[in-house]
Length: 326
Picture 1 (cartoon, rainbow, N blue to C red):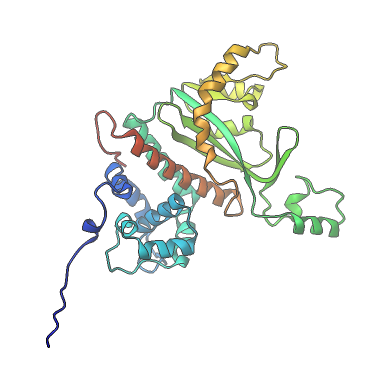
Picture 2 (cartoon, helix red, strand yellow; picture 1 turned 45 degrees about the vertical axis):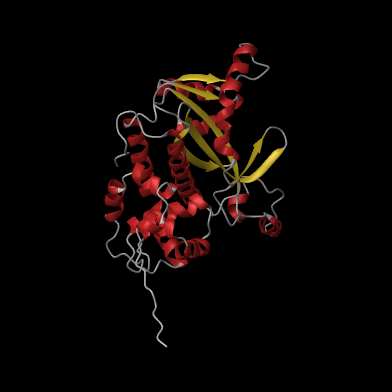
């Protein structure tokens, strides 16, 4: 008795749903400019034949789906939409987990900063981001350390206190610092400072600083170049006023209750219009993956790019053009 085996030929193009968000990301964002930037780093590429253009898309998925390197390896192996987004063939071998760490080191924070700025400038050019009204705030990031080893090391070296002066001498993460919010909320790690374009909800700028840097001083890293900035009580200092004056922006910060110039009705209005933009911080991780400002700044850029890509799906096409050219 003869048995016949039926063979069917298919492609990733057919397997990925027409309205899948990964497919929409590729339609909304032309990667050509970013691919050119990353292509300059491909000489002597140690990444086993995978170009940084492809690996950058893999890293985008990692931060978009909150995956570890090993989880990302499995995700690419098993998920057709992920292969489609990154440019792999249906049967093509995808990278193992060790490749992703090398890719992050090769791209580095400085190059990713250029990529983030490139995307942001195109968002402005396409009319998505106006910098007329900007929300500014910061959130705490807890370092990848428990401080028990640091405490024991400080005792061993006969230090009486474990504070921001002593920590760099004994800490495994010497760039992290003890920060405080309010009177009794302490943490050891970093701060993430963010400015958000209020009409669109897109992240304009993001910066990582040690945890003990006040919000007001961190503003200089994320302050827009025009318009009005809306901040909470941490931004009603003279330092912030000087930064705002230097950047020629209008400061609309909530004032402290003991300030003579406080207007309760106006501050109530500022609080009301700031509230919807707190969601930018509500779902972001509060514990860092890595040690050091550089690596955590890399993470902040990637998370912000992913946030903006997801937000663009809700905003739809810009009025005149349908693509964000890079």
